[in-house]
Image: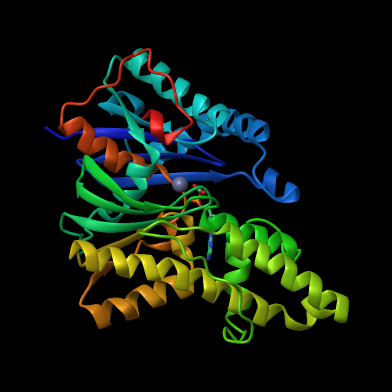
Length: 340
Ligand code: KG4
Ligand code: ZN
């Protein structure tokens, strides 16, 4: 018998719903919240309000695109955390209410596990290579920077993580200093394409083991800009492409150094990339070239699955459902990963 899952994701500022049948994605609808752009970052209170407004139309659209009716859904999967509590409450309450009304099982999903399993999202008729277990996932987003060993669909081990800022924050904060708007990653990526990545040097952290740190490079950029603007008030405008290219190169070098180290230490050569920063063109290119050099099998997500989406929650929910996992009807969301 087929298993038809409706998945809901609302952990940050994207409201998303997806329908999957036996792990194959039939629809994946997303409503991105524009309201945060003018504030230069996500405002939690506004995010939860927007989720409230978006969730019914998004679920409705996902069902329409899948060709299924709500009565044909067998399981509801949802993101329990980590994320913004006010945002998670909207998706969790909706999923709980729906599962109860339809009298069908409810499955909670850890958002990060969704990102980790995103290489397994497949569309009908699609036949693509998927990583074999165990594999290493470089999970890079606005909230996370981790190297994770994915042992099987239900188990993973964090090998390294950031001790301060996430790499997405390092992109976003740089964009803020350069007055480029929010989110910063896409615009820095674009401007860097016409810049010289070797023109400026930013300090790199020396952190032990497989952990990361991105707070130092942000400070290094702040002082660099302050000193140069003193000498030339138009410094940013005149050098924007080179600044973006050099800064982006430093971030990618930092990410790659520990990823290579993790691969050597674990002897794992199955490498995946996930999270919002996995859209970065330099990071993608570098992982591929490094992969050829080191005999890695690399699996880069399609652009549409790099950001938060419900399809990845659906695939993780599918594996959890198959393993017999069921959420209690009084389950509550959690904002921090340690609690999950
Ligand atoms: O996974 P995501 O959509 O949300 C969470 O943080 O969970 O990631 C958003 C992050 C933002 O920091 C954004 O600047 C970054 O992903 N990002 C990029 C690019 N596209 C999005 N960073 C670098 N290059 C990009 N092309
Ligand atoms: Zn995410």
